[in-house]
Image (cartoon, rainbow, N blue to C red):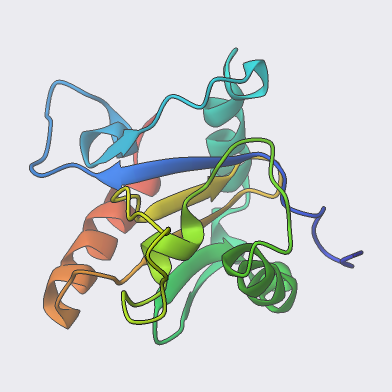
Length: 158
């Protein structure tokens, strides 16, 4: 499968929202807890490099909201990302490491008995430089509050 504006998602960092803000951390680490991925591609500054690229083009970044999730991405990538997320949820795209995206986005009524929700609600494609945020388990206002916190930190210092 080929996309015109992104590479097929492969290096996706999974994460959870922190239960409360951790002021001992800097930037988005204050509100997001990144899971250990187990592959060297996620080490050696890969996340800060992706964040730097995002911030270099931040004026071109937009929010796209669907019923089940929101995406923060470059405006030119939106259509390809929406298609890729659908394929990721259906496990039609195979990533370097397990993402638990299907379990983290899809309503429990859609999941089968073998699907276990690990609680991941955030995914960061560190090659294509976009974020996916699941609305699962949040009220509309809680979700909006989390996105506002993220937005204020993504524009801030590293």
